Length: 234
Length: 191
Image (tube, rainbow over all chains, first blue to last red; front, side, top):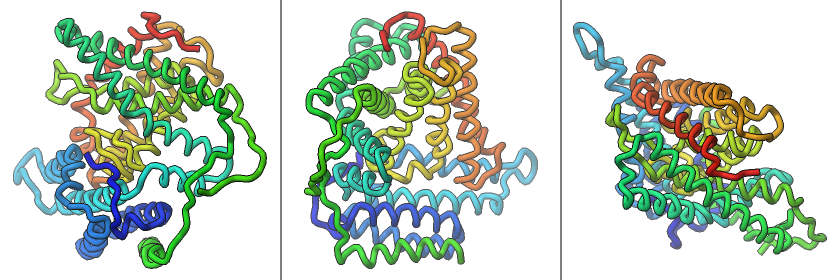
């Protein structure tokens, strides 16, 4: 699984806002230049991003293996014909280029995930999204990260209990319903305890966040983000 | 640390409860990406995710149901391993399944609206209304999912439907039945 790993790579030292800007402008540039030349240039950017994040392309690709069938099937289905000649390779070119573009965006996103801790992502959200909405969004996201492993374990426990009681022989909708209801009950119970704990600790609108500061490293990367964005309009 | 020096302003009690529930529901949505069941009528396994979208609308209402699924998307985009197969990152939000992901908050809000109206009320409504709301939610999910796939993968809508939707649709009936089962069983005492 691709997650944050502490390190001292170039990408680790960048401000999270810079990294978010690169991802968004990279995706926009990919959409505007889905051509062999454009994708070659973006491929170089993606390779540099992975290198800067000290992330192996193999682990990044392994993390998105679920998407691969979609990327392969798209061009194949588009090129398939219901009569002679059965297969028209020229129709597969555009979807194949689109698949490559998607793959490149995934690689750049992997560099962000590998090098950005959640507290920095949260601080970036609260600085980028103004007002109380930004604060609530930041708190919510941090809580999702915090509770995900617990809720995942809750669901797993319900499933194991079901399997131990031969629950697998039940109808699919009953099994879905039992696991979801178990997960839901525990999630609501956790939400109630969390609410109580937040109130008891005077949950406020002005929490203390890690300081974010643009450094000298950010300048070339921000320039890259701006040039990618400008390229969309060329 | 970026310390704040002005006086502390507490978040209102009701809002604290709603944010906590929305966050836990978003975590449940993420955790359900890991739970899949063999499908009796298709080789593609069934995950709990769309079921949780329905439940978010039913139990949290149109506003907080949508907010919780939005939190799920933002957390996933920032690196929480909550998307299909435990993947994470911004790539999924603009990838082949982007249309599905973006449709989830809309579908949760729509289900919430059709069950509750604009205000969160009692979720124990008639079965017809419950099923109708979820069928409408399913329609939104698949419509946006197919359009998203066609746009991102640069294929026609027909090819997108057969590649990214047709095999998944029959399983939605099980999820709708499961959601009705949960609401009817009184297993959850929300509100």
